[in-house]
Length: 360
Image: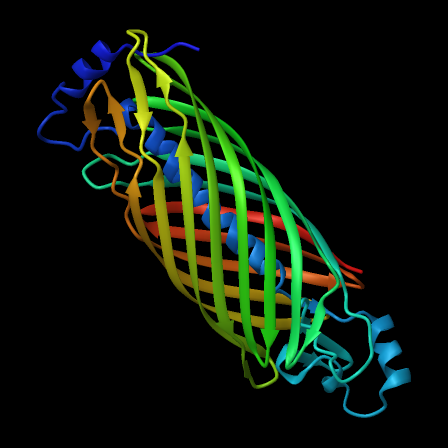
């Protein structure tokens, strides 16, 4: 591993950037670039996991037939009134993980999923030019059998994935790989949904700049909670206001410079708060769509680089809006969907993904 000398770092930090344009994010901020990308990946990963348990799904003909043998009157009680929406003749669309059969002794479904997410956007920081981050996340998850509770159900799941990313600030380029593992817990009661998750992960970055090549290692632990409420509007769609809060702590491994001095980094803390509203609509024949909008408030602290007693200023992230559209179809016990999101503000650009879920 090649490291930049302390002398070169200090000389570079005193170079003028010019008075008419914002400078590139310097290679002195290489580790912070990686930190903020981890926060963005955490945002996508946690919300993607929560979405698995709040997505609509079409009941299969077999499920409906089985119910007819057991229930000859109002079948909506079989799943709970607040979990049922979008009725089209003999079709019923339910929140796939919000099955509520507390009044009837019926099995509740487990679930497994696999999906791919891609993001290509620009990240902006105060007083600097934007950087160009990209990442792909492939994830896999599975749930245990849901447990019946008073007024609804609770569920437990495990999930994990791999990350491939690259970033370019103009002064430094990073190629990154990582992985994460997490646990999920959810509660669905009388129209209210509470999603909670915690995970750990690691990211390994190969950085290249005019001053050499060097490696970075970041380890993180994070937790998130989301609360929402489903409002049934007529018989055609559900309006779902909610709020999400996420926290990520990141440890950055320092290393020695060529001159023998230590390069160290403060631990990094990131807090996200984002209110959201979604509208879920049953189209026809098991097809459904979800439109969503949220605003992301970012609060960060730490992550400073210390080089031979010199402290490098922190990057200050900006808030942004995120708008999404998803469309999917449920067939028997399977559900396939695709999503597309646009970000504007402190992060601007596009992201999207494809997922496959199976209830069994």
